[in-house]
Length: 205
Image (cartoon, rainbow, N blue to C red; front, side, top):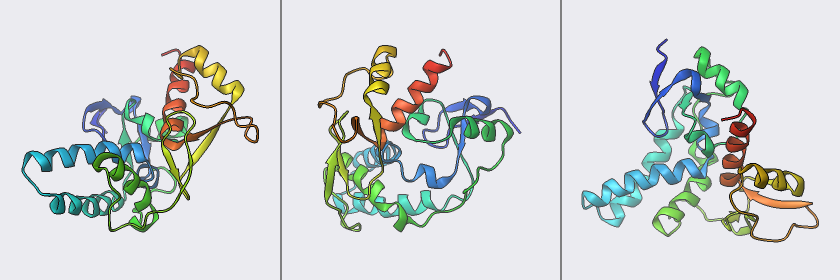
């Protein structure tokens, strides 16, 4: 099995020993991944002069294509910030070329709202083919809307203080701590970024 590979999410050269193997279900629930994917394809469509109707058709084709992948995704270190996962296990799967538990194709109906939120961010409107949920809250770190049913996490006051001291968090939370949470609410995008950067700090990178 070759050591030099290409990241399945950004297309750049990477080394298997410094990457991660993720099942499709971890990739397709990542709004950060979809933001990057949509920015690329929509940008190309606009350069080619495609109208808004043609651009909208890209959404359904892309989520169907990505969800149909039944093999693991090799993700580079930089792109790993887009996902929340067991980093040690995913690194070992990439190094060995083995298949993570839960790998396989995913029905787009199960992740379309995550992709739709990214489409809204890139295009400025929610895709017509996906029912839009109501907004349940906002992220205390980036102010992103958190729709009902969307994944989110919590960061305690102690953890936030440690992350600020180590540089994992570049700026403090936007709001005071939530009394009922003993800390702050974090969207999945911020959770992935914090997890990845905290891991690098722990490893001394």
